[in-house]
Image (cartoon, rainbow, N blue to C red; front, side, top):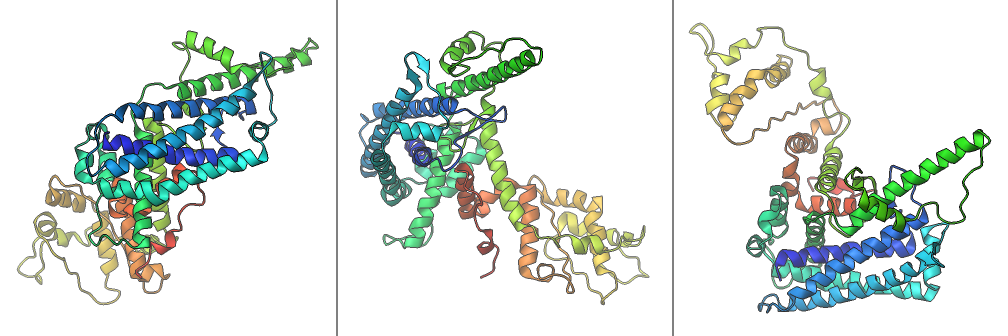
Length: 463
């Protein structure tokens, strides 16, 4: 089986375990929509449709099992097949029970909440048993499968995958980084290193399971349908309110105001004229693929969270406090000295062609900070640096030490945080390259809606 397909399917199971756990415990809102609060019967429809799509995806992997495994992948494949079978078994149990709640005597049943529906489908002991099955899947992932994937796969095998070239460049780079084997790894892997590798592999599986290219799947169509259903219910509510104000009879129904099953038929017949509203309903935990825009937004949020953690209140205070130079005061720096002047190196020539450090020496209060602020703001500085950089991307960053300022303004930590913030703000795609462990943890937290996220303090330290 294609190695990227295995990684993607394992990522789907990772997400299913989290989704199932929260479904049974009602720990968080499973689905959100800005068009209106989702009723319990809508959530029930979404849950069952997404689970059915998950089962279909996992079962499709069975057709690839006739391919003979290699010596390196035989153990991984066996673990994967057991895991896949167990996930299908649990998901099917969830679907079978929840489907029975949706229809009674030909009418949709009403539920006060999704949690009440779940409690009606299983006894307390059965819920405990299901949670234990999910916990068993989670333990298998963490103790065997994820680490086996990390040991078996490498950059070469992933790049040889038929699916690798179909991924966007940023995702390809993330995969290469996540699969880069630590230089000090041995057969005896420390617990800390093992946990780190497992966490990064979890992120790797999540990335792939979310970015799979697909058509408009059933679970996406159901979300479109329910959006229209909510709008239809709102319309009826407004109409009834207006009728009541005018003293006219109000339309009353004993069942759910709108049948998702009936509306789906109408939606299919008129889908050419209806806008796509898939993005209006989002799952707290996506077990299946998401749109490119949704994945792009998630990564942007991850970049922003990491960049924001680097900021501190006084980061730009010293720069802002330095006075502006008078016109022409430092014009000499961009030209050669005359015979009558003390010698200096032409700054324009150094910026365009030279390397090393351009040393500026002066007494306290002589204007060094003013000079540096002037150079940083002068458009010619970047013009000359672009010539020096050639085809390479250019990043210009600054930091102004201030001995009388805050701890960050006069320390190496403050310097590095400021420079990294400017670097990542200009080139966010460098974050998973420079900080793969932090990016992986923040990404997984964002996927699973785990807030607050990672404690960044330990990363921004020189210890």
